[in-house]
Length: 482
Image (cartoon, rainbow, N blue to C red):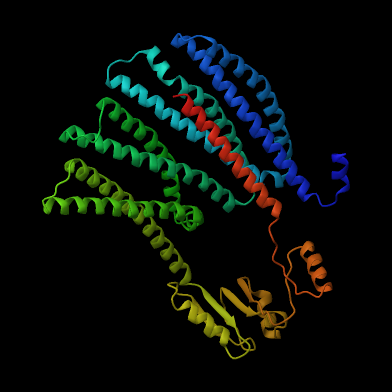
């Protein structure tokens, strides 16, 4: 009955969207079952190394096996439906599919790197304490391995399909923008991780040199934690930030798009904001401690707090200085390129009345650094060579013969200034034509602005809620493992 309704319904937009969401829900549900099943089977296998047994371990094996037998075939069926629909170009470019691939691949890499940090931390701790033992190492990291292995497979598989779908997009600027989004998200994670690791390492060094009490407990543990955080964070940041920065330094069109990218600007402004706010807090704490010492009211743990505030001020200052220089360099390169292009840009403005359009445009361009040569041109006189032509709408529809002949041979850009006082409306497709005719028949003014479907907002909200639930489930698995 449902298939018959689909066949009889001429407007299949909502039905197509519903089917896409339906398939992706089954993919998420079955994939979670398969991940949990593999996780429990791996914990059961590691229990042999740890020489752990009992009803709990046997229950892990039974539950994991049941989840795998149900989850993997169900995932294969659901994902096959998603992949079969991929033959349609609209499906490959569909934002929900791309969002799903982004979420799964990024979730995989985040959890894999987090568990890798735990594994490296345990390994460094055993090396520093000179108590390296294979059985103890597996016993301390079995939960991390049980999470890293299935989610590593998720990262590899869906990362592969994300790259394929991005490569298949026909629009090169959009393809580059989506690729930048992936890299900048990982770069931000790597930057935060590296910053935390550097702060932990400096605190350890201060404690080791001055014998303060910033850390309590085993020194090897603190050193292993800081080194593991840096080992995970620095390579991730360098691997993702270096290609983005190298692309931004190029002077070609790709570099121009990168420097103008809103994703890059958000990344830089977030880093600058964190540097300003963190630096101000650290500076206030440092000045407050110094003033208290000068007034003779030195608080307890003064040296600890002073050194800690100083190292945080240095780190936040370095973060601010570096990213501010990057943002400033982007602006200088863009200004230089625009100035070079504008030096040879001649613009003819054809104005038929009293020249108000020319004066308005010229006043807006007074603050622009680009040296654009704006020329007011009478359309009835001889027309010189130019790169751009700007025409009022009335003149474009009814040009004099000299302008008509000139436009026929003109190969530059043509800009038409709309005039809202007439009854001319430009439509993009037959759907807008039908909509405009209905509005006129009902005595309304033509409104060509298309509204977003309410169903799309509902789908995005549901997808976001589901993504948060999945992250919560995976986070609980990590917590329960320790």
